[in-house]
Length: 610
Image (tube, rainbow, N blue to C red):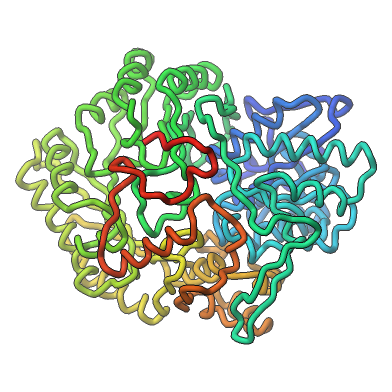
């Protein structure tokens, strides 16, 4: 570590975020490396180090000969101040080298409110913000992650956007870059070749025309780029590359455990859930592969907890036999098995009791809406009887706490639906009193309520978010109804949800707004202490952009959306049919009941592992 970096660390609250040197990092001899890749996570260390996708790509790239992937995280305000004061450029944790020296900078876009952190990291590295300002092949600035299904607000900042899963397409991108670098090809020549690879989107090759009302009139590809960019997927998930070891952090992170991925995709079809549509089709690993990966991670990292992850873990078809096998091995060694993302309608107490022999965790369920009518609208396919039945069994087995997650502001929502949230909480309390094994311990019911944000590539992409005044009113209705003994509640602030909705459905005209907010001081907008909507409102006004146009407007049925040229695998026609069914309160059976024809199978030519 150089002296300037060390001097910065003396004046920050959590120097371990920036020191590097953790157990399990990859360090290579620079003489053996011809491609240096900076994996940039525009969030704090403890968030980025918890992200499974980053662990997979870090290991995958470092397994390639001649490639060295290093990690970079957004600095907190105290570290940024020290670095700027001492003129220390943004650096990678493994080597301490400035990331401006790297060949490729890969940013993962996990959350719309991370966008200003991307600009801040580029600026701290001394790298021009816009792709058009970077004329050489190096450094190449690339993006990936869930926000790429509408990355138009930040498209002008990136040279290439990776749409879909990276396990196969990233090595292809690295090889193409290596060939261009060795041959002396220009950036434009390289980008033309990259645009021909499925899953690689070159934003500068698409011209956007607008109607007089601000809606998109046309998206025209140039330079031989495809009219529609298809998502890239790993067809055989059982053979997908997976790391045998993780970096073990030197400080606390949000999810500090080993993780194995049961499957990708989700059969449920909740109409608000972007991941549920963009991760399709469903592809599962065999129980044998998962058991092998879990055991190997425990051996190489020393973790005492393994999490079985997916969008809906209880839908994994071989879950019980997998858990029985792992528990038999892990319990004598005091290694805990965690199973997040359980659904109340498939709650299995025997399974939960079996896997939590080492350490019992609380119960978490997400009814999402307070009435059956609204759950049918959003296609949650969950009845309150399912929830209460799961709680009854759990309380009878000794559990005394449950967390419930809901959304407010969902399409067609009424005050009756809102009051249904408190009614469910009261029913859970009554359930405890009637069925608890030990009522003297008391019960804790935690209710979390977020505000609905319409997302691209979902059936609700056409819906506008309710107006901010109405959000505030409905939150007051909720607060008044949730003043119940033994019930705690938390409500997400409307300001961040409003901005998230703007960025989630926005187009390229938002790029100068994002830049303006960053220049006014926006950095880590996902953190309450750093977020200030007034900076954004000033930037919207300066740029002549009405944020309500993106956040609150209902889109026309035949309107061209900013993301229409990005294909997630699910057709726009299917999404529209689901939207219309939602307005009629008609649920759609999940994929296990039979294929609904969403279109995702066109990406693999196979079948869903439902």
